[in-house]
Image 1 (cartoon, rainbow, N blue to C red):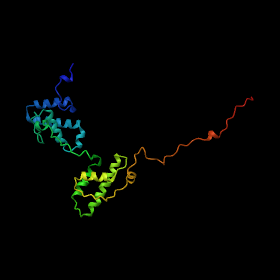
Image 2: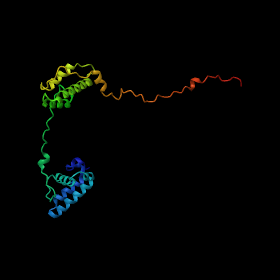
Image 3: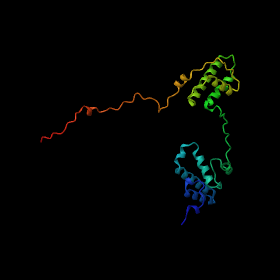
Image 4: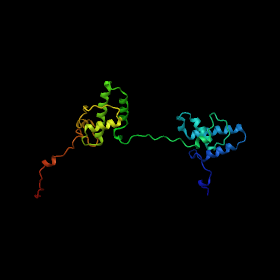
Length: 220
């Protein structure tokens, strides 16, 4: 019995073994003109096998690349596109650098960090800087309450704001932040705990309570 494990390896199994055999037969054709015609016929066949590729840009370019890949880069035909090289597909991709982020103040988010960096670039005489610092501190306090339901003191938020800005922001000690209760009320209520007053109450059938029990008559 002939098993697939004993057959030649399929480079792109999605096209099937018959396409792989046609490519091997195309490589064996000695006449270059006939070999080019056979390669173009194979392109049409694998294009019909994968009609979804027609919606992608340069789909014929991809088909020709697949043809050379399945031929093990050993097919000498005239391609309308640059012939791919083996090293292009065998080389390992470059490592993507992992973003380095501070884990100490992660609960405040990267937006707060970006706002602090922007506020550090403003001049002390700019009136927008004091307003921005107040808004940043208020948002930090609101974010703090999301993870910590207990009350938080303003000096804790202001000291952490100084640490995030690395001392670049001159934060006034007289700054007044919104109360924790006001910020807690502005937080979104989870769907499970949200009261649903519009839900209709189930109707109860009280007619059975009004009916009196009657004993069956024994007079027959």
